[in-house]
Image 1 (cartoon, rainbow, N blue to C red):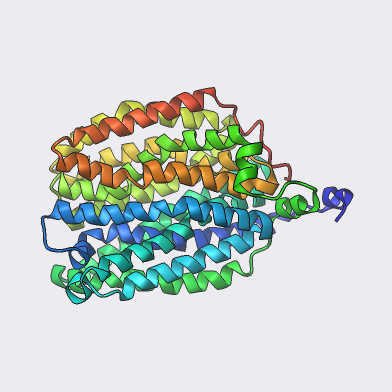
Image 2: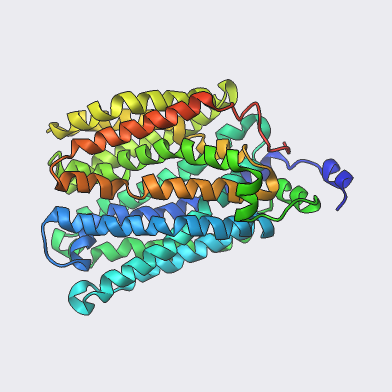
Amino acid sequence: MSEAAVVDSPPPTRRHRLLNIVGGSAGNLVEWYDWYAYSAFTLYFAPAFFPKGDRTAQLLSAAAIFAVGFLMRPIGAWAMGVYADRRGRKAGLTLSVTLMCVGSLMIAVTPGYASIGTAAPALLVLARLLQGLSVGGEYGASATYLSEMAERRHRGFYSSFQYVTLISGQLIALALLLVLQAAMSEAELEAWGWRIPFAVGAALAVIVFVLRRRLAETQSFHNAKAEARPRSSGFTLFRDHPGAAFLVMTLTAGGTLAFYAYTTYMQKFLVNTSGFGRETATAITALALLLYMLLQPVAGALSDRVGRKPLMIGFGIAGTLLTVPIFTALEHVSSPYPAFALVLVALLAVTGYTSINAVVKAELFPAHIRALGVALPYALANTLFGGTAEYVALWFKAEGMERGFYWYVAGMCALSLVVYARMRDTRHHSLIAED
C-alpha cells in the first residue's frame, strides 16, 4: 500500500465507529468480570484453598495469589503488545479473551485444599497466571483499539468506555455475588457456590471470542503496516521512546494504586476493619461503583473540551489530600450511609485518572509501537503498585500499622501529581494521526 493510498483512505462512518467501539468494549467487560470475580468472591473461596486459620491470614494468602497474577501482566503486556502491533489490534483482543476463558474455567473446576492438598493453591496460582497474561495484553490492545477507532474530537469520551466496561465487569461480579448471597446460605457459598461466577465467566468469554473475531481493524494499524518503521519490540520501545515509556509508568503509579485501594480492597476493608457484614459491604461497594461507572464518560467528554491534564491534576490533588481522612473516617463508621458517601468521594477523586488514562497513554506513541507502548510500561507500574495494593494493606493491618497504608496511597498520589503537573497535555500533542 502506498503512502498516497493511506492518506486517501476514507474515514469510517460514525455508525461504523460506534459498532466497533461497542464490540471492543463488550469484550473488555467480560475480561474484567473474570478478573474481578476473584476479588469479589475471595471472602468465600479463601477457606477452600488454604488451611484453616483466622480471616486475615486467609485473605492475606488469597491476596498474595491476586498479586502473583499481576506478575504475569508485564509478560502478557510485552508478548501481546508486540502481537497487536504486528498482527493487529483485533488479533490481540481475540487472544487475550481466550486465555481468560481458560483461567476462569480452571478456577471453576479445581478441587479444594481438603481434597487435593497443596495442589489446590498451586492450580489456583496457575489459573491466575493465565489470567494475568490475558489482562496484561488486554489493556494495551483495548486502550489502543478504542483510542484509534474514536474520532479526534470525541477521543476522550469514547476511550473512557474502557473503564466503563472495566467497572461494569466488576459490578456484574458484585451483582452476581449479591444474588448468590440472597439465594444461598453462607455454608453453601463457601462449599461450592463461589464456583458459579467463574463458570459464568468462562462461558461469556466464549461468546466474546466470536464477537471479537468480527471486529474491524483500525485505520491506524493499516497505515502503520504500510510504512517502513521498526518492528515493535521491547528493545525498540525503550531505545526509541524511553521518555514516553517512563512517563506512562510514573503517571500510572499513583492512579492504579488509588484505584485498587478504593475498589477491590475497599470491600474487604469494610468487612475486616469497619466491621460491616459481607452483604452490606458488597451493597455499599456495588452502588458506589455504579455511580462511579456513570461518571467515566462525563469526565472523558470534559477532557475533550478542557484537555487531559486538568483532570489528572485534579485527581492528584484529591488523592493526596483526601485518602488518609477517608480511610480514617471509615474505620469508625457504623452506618452504611456515611460509609457509602465516603467511598463515593474516593471514587470521584480517582475518576480524573481512570476516565482518560487509556487515551493519554495511546496519544504518547506512534501507531507502529502503540499497543506495546501503552501496555508494557503500564503493566510494570500496575504490577508494582496496583497488584500489591491488597497485600500491602493487609500486611500493614497484620503488623498493627493499618494507617501506614493510607499514607502510602496518599504519598504515591502526590508523586504522580508532580508528573501530571510537568507533562504536556496529550490532547494538544497527540501522536494519533488519523481522525
